[in-house]
Image 1 (cartoon, rainbow, N blue to C red):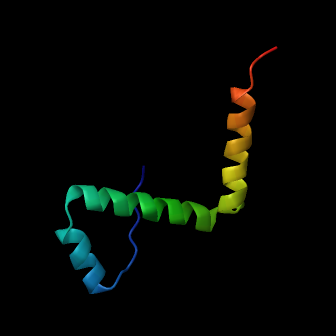
Image 2: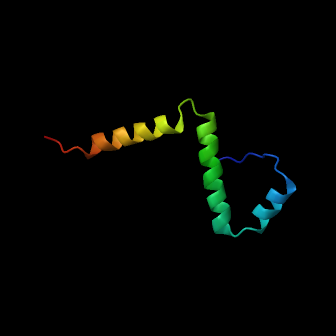
Image 3: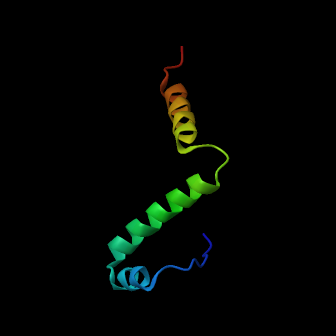
Length: 63
């Protein structure tokens, strides 16, 4: 992974710095998911349906 810097209000920066490692990791996961959706050419729903379609196809028994 790579790091980026994004300006945030001081109260958010302070809250993040004070948070425990689990809370920081959870915030990072949410932010990464949001940025992935924001910059994706497909909507979150389209991505989800593609994953579900692939999982369904892989779950079908071979005949």
